[in-house]
Length: 143
Image 1 (cartoon, rainbow, N blue to C red):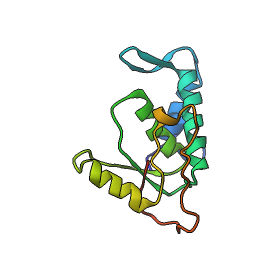
Image 2: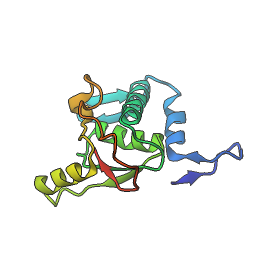
Image 3: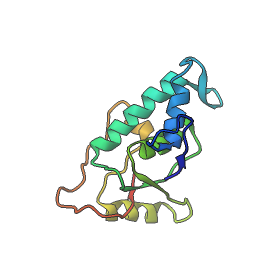
């Protein structure tokens, strides 16, 4: 975890996500994330970030869990990475080199449902929940 010393010199450490949220809390109509024609204001980005964080927590993720991410370079990908850190989880980026078969095997082995913020933004989290008997491990869980 990256800890940034805050200007108030309080004893509570602040993360880079805290700094981003602090920035996004001012001038909500200013642009926060831009990719081509897609533009999110600071207010929209903050609200989407919290929705993603709640959806991830709803999937049973807890602080300290590893989350495997296989993401394109898009606005929603930035928000997913921030949401994973917001809820206290670790990001493990999955490289595209292994190919779909290997990625599918990783997802199957993790006993987690793959989840796409673009596929499920209207429908919420995936419908296939994690196996109830799966013990918590430090293994990354692909989304």
